[in-house]
Length: 340
Image 1 (cartoon, rainbow, N blue to C red):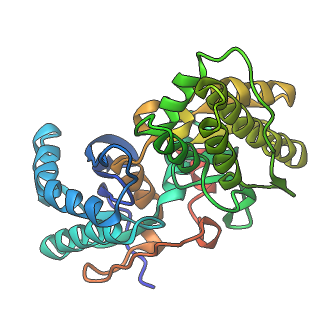
Image 2 (image 1 turned 120 degrees about the vertical axis):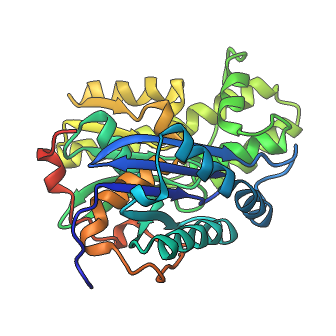
Image 3 (image 1 turned 135 degrees about the vertical axis):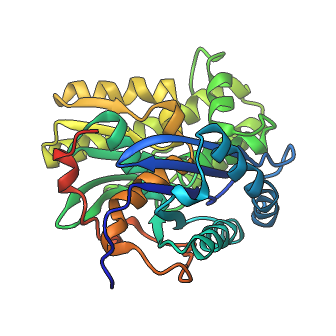
């Protein structure tokens, strides 16, 4: 593959699920971002085609907004990075086509970015951690990972649905609305007790689908909804905490970084901070601004990956299923010595 020179300004395009976002990075520093999210009708989850239609509708206006807010010209960009997966196929394709069209028009390279790795890199950026144990938790991801031998390696992960998706699904089933995580946590605050839940931890891996089914059955069977919410939240977070604790003990890491949209959770912050203190690890969470899906994290990771990962303007792909441990992270160590 051709090795391109390091760019100065990279545009990032994010479109994996319900959010279409554009971000800009200049010389390794985040300049800013704009975005708009698709909100499904009450009682429904995200429909891939409806999300894609939303993204296609708002993409041109968001690009104009980005240029105006940050006083940019299209000719200022040296490369376009886009989220190539994992994610919803139709939504991913909108972002890929938008990025490819810009790259062809401007005659600049494209950089495909793994969405999960982008969450990790924006978290390393804001926490200033060099080589942390990473907890990646979002609507589509639940994994405990660490860098080793050229890639992010997975210590433990969900075997079915991600923790964010699980809580969203439960919230939808019991009428708490979308997004589900804050709604379920808010409901849980009204409870003064919990009921017993299973804790399906398989080796170092986790399973959340059964928890959702159990919680829905309890709620429909007459258990007070706040009690069910509190029990579901506490069980889910303590399952994750157990795997994180094992990973800290095994790896000996003294930095714990928490990435992804669910990192906004105050309750989870309390739980994981306690785990860090127990093992003498410094715990930091991605800031709320960059916790959810955003174009800045795609632009930043595209900037890092640019040299060997860039392609010609007409070449793009999407992968609905793409494991983060399949991606060569050849920029990892140089970031520990790069001022930001």
